[in-house]
Image (tube, rainbow, N blue to C red; front, side, top):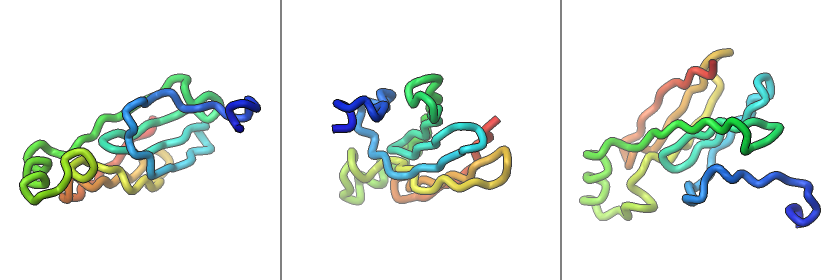
Length: 111
């Protein structure tokens, strides 16, 4: 219904089904940060498909292999699913992912 009424703009940046779960609205800069499987997207609030920035942040290969050896599903469990996007200060966001069952965190400079 939203598409038919032209009241939404679909995000076309990913056709891979990246498991969108974590969102952070950055009103000051007019951006939306989206945490997905192995990626963090920085989207423009006016047009989600304009100037899309994407950070690729996969789990380490050895952690993925350990995950698979433990009997986990390679596609749905053995990846770096971004679960935390938290403002840290005016210039950085604190980010954490599952890291294929070996959690890892870091900072993104928004610039």
